[in-house]
Length: 204
Image (cartoon, rainbow, N blue to C red):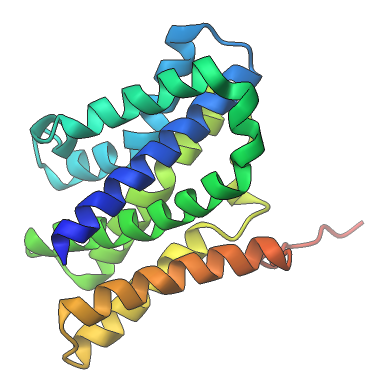
């Protein structure tokens, strides 16, 4: 199971790197700027999670393949970004897969440190969404997840489902893919039907 998760994790890392690189290209950054934004988008969440957990060196330093995947995604995007724009729907699907996988990987790693499920779900969400937040911050933009898109909420829902399934005694081979599928479905449906969370209205 975790071997499959590993390859899905690499797929999500690649998609996040492309997403970050595209945002840098749209800002007209040079190749270093594009590489930097691609890197923090793809690996920023997992790096922050590991630092919070006291896991050093952080995970991508142990598995250098992640760094090569980011480099590949950024360089391909920089060289072929005009063509990649045509594949945005496919990239969005990979991005959604990455969101689900990053959440469950973060949860598993946190539980291995002996921490509670509440903290594990928080770390899972951080793993999945913080890279995108860092991308938006470095691009001097208001992070989308704070005011527009159902993004972190999908991760939280998947983490909560994983907790419920674990409490009911479900094996990892069941709870992990089911939770990932829920995150992907919530994300896809939210974008398809323009779902958003309530916003407080100001009194005049």
